Image (cartoon, rainbow over all chains, first blue to last red; front, side, top):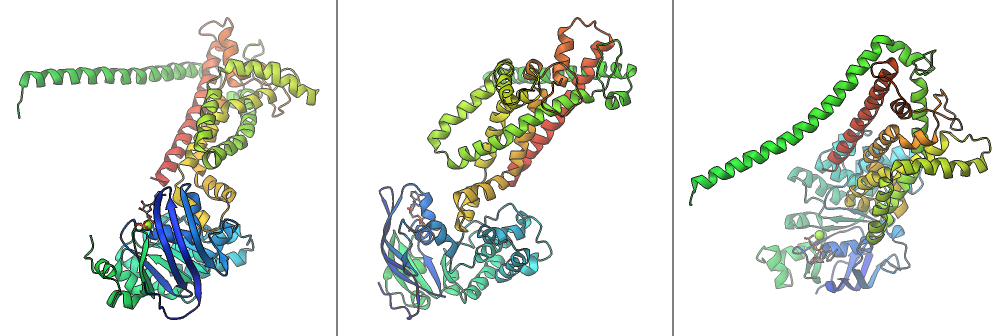
Length: 258
Length: 301
Ligand SMILES: Nc1ncnc2c1ncn2[C@@H]1O[C@H](COP(=O)(O)OP(=O)(O)OP(=O)(O)O)[C@@H](O)[C@H]1O
Ligand SMILES: [Mg+2]
């Protein structure tokens, strides 16, 4: 496996990481360095463990009773998977956007301010500023600025997903995890979110799971190919898509794998 | 394909008969309900031919059984409102906390044990709640509040709160449980604690379902009869003081129905007028409650 990525700051360092659901070995000996301010795409056939891996970065697997793990995920010198680390602290720094848009049944503004409010921000002017900034960053501001008080559920699917991104950005995380963020969206909404991802990497480290090869090629700097819980290949996106080192990777991205 | 026309014929006749019987059953209950509403409306109409509707709603005294008759329903409405309000004050917070516990914290095993116990509470005959209020809760309250009379609104109100608790906790728990897991995940991913998820996401998201549970519980409290008839007293009393004895609409109906009132007299007609009030109130509340529940379901359909 080649890991000769352009040097750069490492944001997340995955070391000898294994994960199980009960007896099922879902992630096998994963080692990978995720670079700061880059977009890292994770690709691979359904069930290969992409979501399992991405959920390890913000401890969302804690809610699955059968889940077990070994190895390390280092973030700012701490092991995220350490059970003494407070998962709430982790999730404040590592934001997540889910496959299916899941806005709260509250107003657009209240969706964005949810996180800051539970962090104790009370000042109205501060919250208003957060709403505007987050919605601008999520490329949604112009579409909703006149109806911030209306229900988030009145938005279209693509707008809802961008609202979910804005909601995650409002926490000012260091890392943003996107698990198939466009799978429920039409091509126009998808391209909006792709543009957004490219802009956001200036400020955030982004991990994106996608089934869409073109999407991975368009938005990511680095790509990881997983297969049956193993990290088969991890390299520069251009390299993966033009001259993959592994035959398996090539078969998958050219669609020759069933 | 083999078509045996006679067996097809027989099956058709069978199906039609079954359908006719089922239709008959359905129509029967519709007729009975219509009949009840018909009688209620008729007698109420008769009542209002003798008593002005203005007096009914503005007079502050209710003394239809005395020689000096007054027909102001306000004291009865007040008694009903008072006991129901006390019940809701007791049951709403307890009910919400119970349902949060059951929906968000309890393990499936604990939930399986506690839910049926709560439902048993709902199945206790209300006459037992009545004596419980009169003979146990009232004396207990009198230890703290020595001025509390034997019949009062407070004690049956509290016990009624216990009685409607299962309605609130069970319907609210349904509403909370129906809140999609994806919303909880969203909240956790934003760094919420479990408590914050429960109170800032689950409860607000289940809001209309929870409100519906309150409304249906109040409707039950307003219609509740034995409990208040036994423990709240028989004194129409225009008061909002829980320490006083009050008479509810239902208690009045019991009182007249048990007496030897002659059919066709004004006393007789009063119970239909009061019954209509009661019916309209609970019917209205039930409609609002069910509408809210339906709307809640649509949000997450
Ligand atoms: N909660 C769970 N309990 C048991 N097994 C699970 C659980 N979640 C996932 N798995 C198993 O772990 C493996 C990896 O699942 P995961 O969801 O990470 O795949 P994925 O790569 O994200 O797939 P997809 O592209 O379909 O989303 C699968 O075989 C799946 O059946
Ligand atoms: Mg997945």
